[in-house]
View 1 (cartoon, one colour):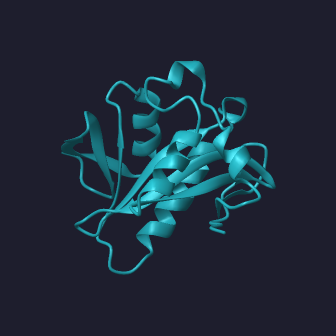
View 2 (cartoon, helix red, strand yellow):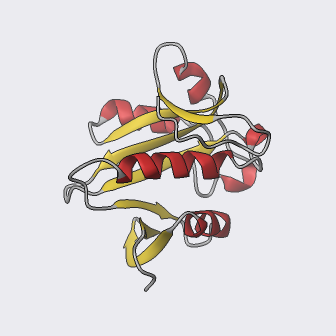
View 3 (cartoon, helix red, strand yellow):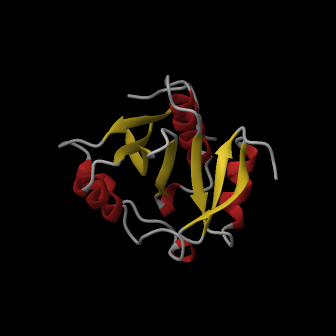
Length: 159
């Protein structure tokens, strides 16, 4: 379990845990709001399949106390940098600070790992909510694009 002491607005502890035999079905059913489907798949199951089919990404379940409320994944790029991706918070749980707590928890955990120079993520340029969230957490656009998405790096100077 990854626990950085973050809580949602209701005071629930937000932690990240491995996807396992006990929680994978609930994680697979996590679904974003309909208006977010231009940026994320309709169900987190797509991300779980991606992590099962490649050795690049690792899926994590996002918990609020003991309830699965989302999915996030991380991976290591060829240059050794860490990437955060596959962030989906269930529509019924959005607006409570869970996404912010989950990204802050994972970014801090990845940044503390030895031998990895950067923590990066990417978001669709029209996803202004994601851009604002990631900027507030210390991510800044690098000027690069990946699959038509803005690449941002933790602590990188704005360009």
